Length: 543
Image 1 (cartoon, one colour):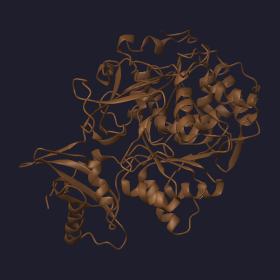
Image 2: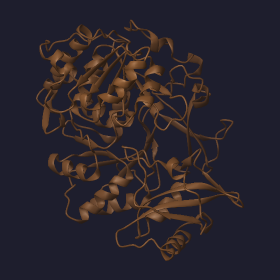
Image 3: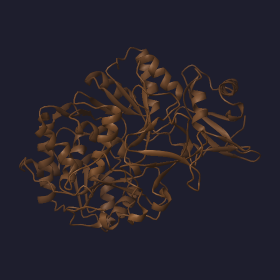
Image 4: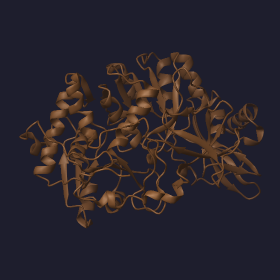
């Protein structure tokens, strides 16, 4: 089943799961040549198609064209191979915030045939060490502003032999930049196989041993030729912007692979706070935005104060459930729907999504072309329409964990079972209920936290909220809401009662939050995803 490989270092192919444990792959619509290097397709090939003078990347105050990006990555690839000794199949870790230099390093390492591991700038030495050990990483490229934690790792790592700095600003004044400076702009990229591993994506929020998902060169193009082409309808006129880190596959797709595949531009922000994104959307007239619902709420408030976000034609929401009030407010304000969707690191990107002309609130949508989905019980039996069950997916991408016994938990009977609870309605649309481990069971009732959150967010008092289940002696669990209120709203017992009554009047009364905790801010990841596990440190005080 696997094709040719150009890897001299065969670690990743040797540590693929047994093929009997793979999900079924549906590749009918995705036929690529046996030799395929995804980085070449996103740079040199685009120049050959006439996009050389088009803007590819915007960041740190300057624009870079496709020709500049191609030359830059070719010089870097020469440096990686000639000076640092990178061999095809070696794992190369990249540590950086979202900036053009990180994209260039990723593309260069991929051209050199390496298997790239992109990492978050916030990770500490212990977290980095776990990744380095799991993937047996030999080389690391690091923004010089973030070297300290990685240097600590190198001192005790059995495999990490080389840590080289690059300049994440516009100055190009670090060791890797200087090595690349005198290199030729032509580079004969490694003729990797379409089935060679190109990327290891480590799942976020993992406890215990980290899980590394393995993605082939063909997979990187499939997510663009599927979701980006068919759902977003990307053209070379688009300008992308967003908040997810490039270290996450959601960010790498939305802020690098998708725009580069179609000759579009990507705007990269190291600090992608909502105010910064708003300013850049206005400045560069961005057309496609990837971020979480909390950021879209800030954008809605900014539009009320005069911000011009009219250039946005696609507002993609993922990572957190999209509350119906946010969807409705956005549509009312802009006349355009938001595109809710669900993806997973294991699947590389979004596999179920709303579509233009066919989008609905409180609805995740339908499978992206090429994917199939169904709702199953714990025995993998398909459930009737309307029943809550586990979401099972198969398509052109799928879960392959690096040397991990948990492969058989995620892939069952050829299907990827994501850990999300969904329903499918009579028209075939999928609706998110909760994470498998986030369903709240109170006095025998199953309560989906996102539904309670949506009810709270429809109150004019509430700016943000997150709902969790907490232990309770009599009820097993109760619903607890952590709430950020708008300025001018006092956090009083009267406010608690007002919000509880509002929820009771909006959804089934048994779902109301018996505990409400007011807070100044909710804990979030850098991509805007609410960290509910941190909220569980609170002890409930039932109201």
